[in-house]
Length: 554
Image (cartoon, rainbow, N blue to C red):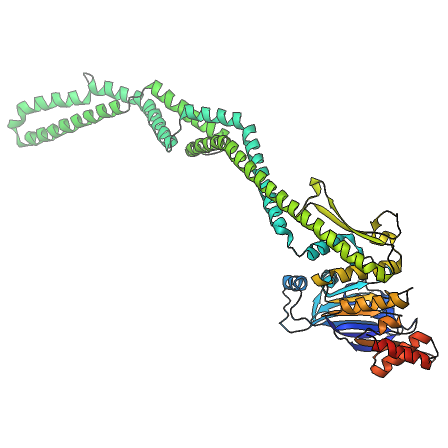
């Protein structure tokens, strides 16, 4: 709850440190005393627009700080702060401070850590509910009605949000798979053609290197075959070197015995014959090895060229062609298997959609039942608040499928009809300022058991009513404040008498400077203030006696 409001240089307030307590707190004072300044100051720390007109005349800056204490930090506040790595220890107060300059600009802090104003707006609904004559937030805003009804129903949505998320995820998976299959099917004919072409060629890993090597050898043999043929004719002819050596060796053999030198010459000549014979054998072997088949060379070249051409077509290396074949086969297999996958995903999506529909339908029925109970509870509060001719209805309307979501299939809105026979319409479209405030009070009383913001503030909810109606408003505000904190700005003595704490707002002037101050009243001071509210400027003994009766009657 709100435990302290610290204000510096806001309009007529020079310096104010105001402590608050639990239960019902009332703020009273003469018209124009500055009650709205307190609400404007509180609005700053809740993320309202920083208006430089709020800075006190003659000052260059102003600030407002609000201190909240909780047994446990509200979950929305904890989550928002945790996302920014702002830690608040258990039992540590939450202090929101807003500073603004007279020449424009403002800064916001949470426990002295700078934050954006958007964060203040995000956490404000969990901290303070502010209801006034022209309230267009909170209960008057239809965007929050569904959440309020669900909270009143006491459920957690029956797993609808989870079912919605699972259904949407399945729809996404089905859509992605369908896109993959459609893309593959569009390429199916091309894949088949590519695979047929590669299958006919049957490329093998390492084949390019082998073919290139074979082709090079054949081409070399083709170049050398002519030279070898000429050598063969020289070597094998009647005047070949080998034949001449053999003739010379035979002749020398006949005369070698005549002289030792001739024997040595014969020996050398015999070795030459042997070497020449070996050379002849080598030439013969080389000629046989280099013999080429022109058709074989043509076949090797054709296959090598075909492999390289198809590799260029698929923008890969020749050795990668077998991998391309496997990829094409897998893609074609995926097309065939994709149909089965689509069937499976479609079935799963249908089942999850049905689960969502069942849970959303159950939630719809829960909401309809809770709406009936809420309508009865609000109706019971209307007559004492002088709204006995009015009717209240919680409209639970099924939405078209394209507007379904994690919160179900319903739109929820609180409607009223202020006169017999009149049509129902939204709260803030048909109720006057006073009626709207009382409708909101009736709603808050009906919804009180399900909780809400830590602090509720009502601004002049009792305007235009008095007597029994004002007493009824005071009684309901006090009931609403049980176990929590409600602050009300009031002109009604019947409401003021219900307050557990009573603050009075004064405006004073020394002729040159006007100031607003706030004071917490004691018992005797409360009697005097309520008497003033009853009688006006001059407080009479009769007014004091009536004030005593109001205070004793609560």
